[in-house]
Image (cartoon, rainbow, N blue to C red):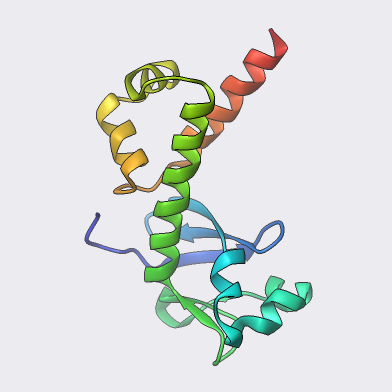
Length: 143
């Protein structure tokens, strides 16, 4: 896993209980928090109140997503979830297309080595790779 966990540059609420996190280095991740906030009673207000969830801000120095002094999620946790969820999404996409890692990487113009990094969860899944997957799906449907 990458050792330097970046802090958060910006954060905003997405659909449902997802956060769109832009990291200090410029990478963007969509992090689904449904399961995470369901596990902790302190986050009960976030599960129930859409307006409160959308009121997320970057915490001090970019080290957390902040709703209140009691409700924060550290950048380390968000980073870990982004890695896990990106990896799972990419693996599912590839499995649905019945491709090997090498075939999927070639279809999207990504090196096989980087594809393995993304699927193993050691590197964030770039937005461009996710969009390329979605674009390939659209191209297949249009054909």
